[in-house]
Length: 258
Image 1 (cartoon, rainbow, N blue to C red):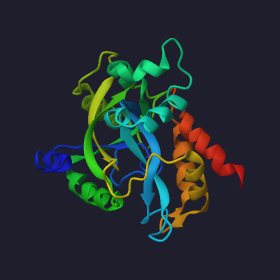
Image 2: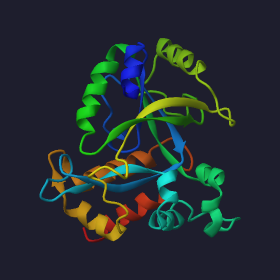
Image 3: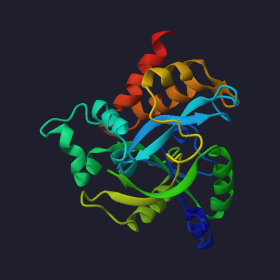
C-alpha cells in the first residue's frame, strides 16, 4: 500500500511536496501552500522526459531528487555537490565532509513548497498525480520543514486567506510536530525519479543537459519553459537561502546561446 493510499483509507488530508513543476503548476484542490525545505537531497535534471518535455525519439530533461545515500555511493555525485551545494561553505574540509553524515545531511537543503489537499479530494488528487508524474517517478514520504508562519512574510496560501481560513490553517499547523529549530515538520508525499528507474540518466554533464533542454519540446511545452518556471518559482519564494547554484548555472548555460 502506498503512502497516499494509507492516508486516504484513514480519511486524512494530503500534503504534496513541490520541488519542480508543482511549484508553478499546483495540483487541483490545493487549499493552502506553504514554503519550506527538506534535508538530505540534491535537485538535478537527471530524469529524461519523453511524455512531457520531450518525445520518445528526443527525450527532454526534468528534475528529480538524489538522496544522500545515493550521493555517498557515487563519486561523480559527490563532485557535483562540492561544485554546487557546498560551493559557498567555509570552515571545514570539504573533501572529508562525506564522512560526516549528519553535517552533510544538514547542509543539503532543497527549498520548495507544500500543498494541503483536504481529505475529500485526496483520492482524486492522488489519481491525477499518479498520471502526471509517470515516466519513472514513484511516490515517497518525506519530512518537510516550515521555517516560519507569518502572513506578512511567508506564503501561507494559494490566495489571500480570510479570517476563517487563517484560523483553520493555524489549527492544522498546531497539531504538527516541530524540529529542534521549532519549525513545523510535515510528513508529505513527494514524487521522485530514483536512481534505479529506467528514465534516470544521471550523473550528466551540465553542458550536455543545457543543450538538451534548449532544444527539447514535448506535449507539455518547451523544456526551457519548464526550467525557467522552476528557477523563477525558487527566486520568488519568501524565504532566505532558497537560491540554487546548480539551477543558476544551468539557466545561464541554456540562455547563453539564445
